[in-house]
Image (cartoon, rainbow over all chains, first blue to last red; front, side, top):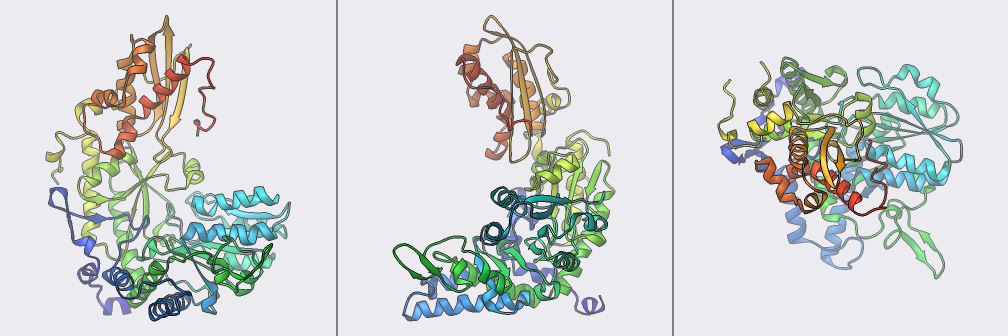
Length: 417
Length: 144
């Protein structure tokens, strides 16, 4: 904290890196972007990297025996190494480029789960998972005869680790868990879950789409087997994501998508596979996006996760305090000491969809809906919630604007102050 | 702090919409409906059930039930009020623009999904009534 205080967080300078944040919306209102958990805005260095790749050395990777092809391939592999260091993976070849978190998790569900799970095996999930880290396991269970087990949540929306023993056994082959809930903001104890999973011989797969942008991720310190995230939530482009997996797992797994680049040799009736990561990168990779994701990772690494985390937690504390003081507001999830920079809430008498619409009129962009977590919303007995998600480029003034806009929305619905 | 309502006077949350939302017409269940149909907007979770009691090809009573935003619920209320006394023939003629005209407020494409949910439920229901024996009007996924 002292290091952070010593280097004051100059949010105005940070915002200059994000031209989209500087625009005015209808009615000359400034944009208050509180929807980073849906997709993060892109710093200019990422936009520049896309333009650079497209205008200077666009060429298919791993193919062209020419200068452009060499340059793009070099850039792509440099991005892979940047991501390897970012995750502290043992080697670059443990970084598989995918189209995003969803594809990365499906890759594990097809390449690993369908190959290794047997009838009666168990997959431990829980109700806070995004559909992307739940539905692939439902399908894998149906295909293999494995069974889903649900680790209960506490009343305040954390994993109930006191019940872990009852739900983990030698039947458990996989623990699928989010690093940070995209609704409740809950940050899960991945290191402890990995240790407990391994103690019964299970693997752990982490949906890190929400956690990777907010805190340092060390796959070796956490000792996770699989970890997936998306580029676009990490200030990078859409269409690219990453699956990290330990080398021996990637070697043991079956390919997911088949086609070009993932083969060693193709015969008339069968084929053999390339080594990882190529084995899982069939077809033309989103190489421009992957190169720009490397730039995004360098950008957040340079800012530093200590400072990012400190700024975001300060914004979260502020938002939590202001929203709690508004009549009729209910905030979901645990106390801020257990969560990242996401606040999901409802306002009595104002449907989240109406709230999002009214906030938009004041330039405040939030998300409303079930956020791809229908089982969690069933548990909360809600069809929808409103969600404000914060990033290091947000300001305390924006948090205040959010609170004022919620109060104004209540007035539109004729609710007393 | 003064609410920024000046630019909302001609806006979608006008008295007409809020009145229907707060005091809906025929929200509830009919004891003996001739037919009913439910659907939901999978994106936002809005959910509407429309029930009709039909006598001699005319809507004697229309009720709706559901959960959702002010636009979807107000639209359902306006629709129930509008369709009573109409023939099934007339309901078949009712187009999306007629529903949007009932609402009287301008809706962006994303909010039109809310404003048209009850109308879509009604159209499916009427289609099933006018195309017997037809498939079941109850969508197995609609109760979610």
